[in-house]
Image: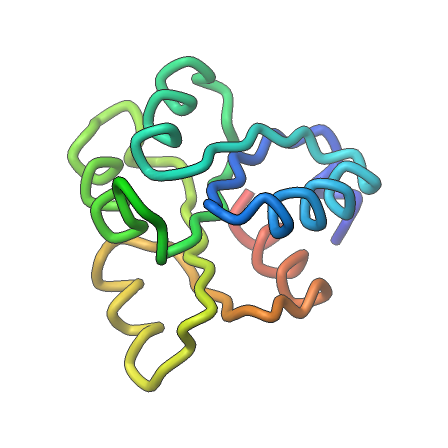
Length: 126
C-alpha cells in the first residue's frame, strides 16, 4: 500500500499544528509530498496554486472555513472536483460519516487516526 503512495502529493488541512506535524512526519517518511493548510480558505488557495495535488486530508472542524464549507467549494470548481477528499474528524458521532460523504468527501476517518487504515484509504483513492 505504501509503495502506491510514494511520490504522491497530499494537501493536509488542519488548524492544529500538532496534528499537521505528526501526520507530516509520518507521511513524509513513506515518500509522500505534503502541502499544508491551516483552514479551508488556505486549502483552496493551495489547491489553486498546486494543480498536481493527488489527495486532500481535510479536518472537518476548523475556524474561518470548516471542512463542510471547503468541500462545497471544491465540488463547485470544475478543476478541483476530481481530487479525492478524505474527511478527518475528532468529532466521531453517529451519522458523521454519512454527513461527510453527503457533503462531498470520498471517504472518512475519525481521530485518533489509525495509521494503517489511513494509508489503506489513501491508497484506495490515488
